[in-house]
Image (tube, rainbow, N blue to C red; front, side, top):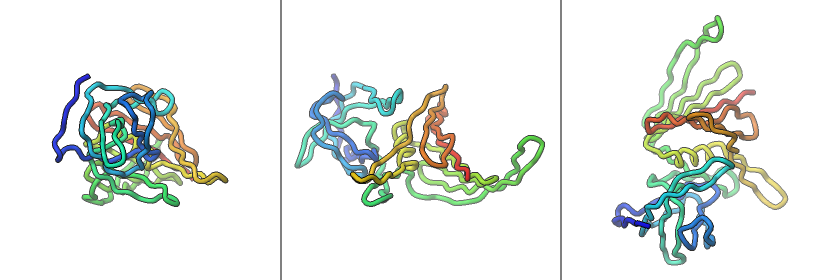
Length: 223
């Protein structure tokens, strides 16, 4: 097993998994979990083990990553790299202390775009509301009682985009035992598209691997 050491400037990462990031006693997914780090926390890396692994997330969906050795005053252990990002996230409280991390980056521009869309033999006037961020362009379109959402990501890995999806489409269920976080369920992969299911009005939720280093997340809500 080879390893690589990083300078102090390069070794700061942030946890982005809404369900929390496990700290393992040893660099193995079968190792004892000694701690769970909350989303949005900073972790200081002292070593990256270069051997790659796949971590199963939802059924047949797995995320590729490496084990990272971390150390602070209260623990020393290993975390899986698919749960972290170099980008410092903005953290928002979605419900009674449950937080999500957003690595969209700073907002750069907001605009509207008018276009004609043909359905069957009819043409309709549509207006896209477009918001450009440092790492994603979000397009919102309303049409015929439905709302269409398209997120075009750049500069992010597949695992970072996946965690953006889970944070954006999370559902909080309240039970007698407390609040329960429900993230979208992975359904299937077809070619370069990963399909998910979420309770509520959201339909056709998917991640598209554009095969050029960018990813698209899209969905629609119909009332």
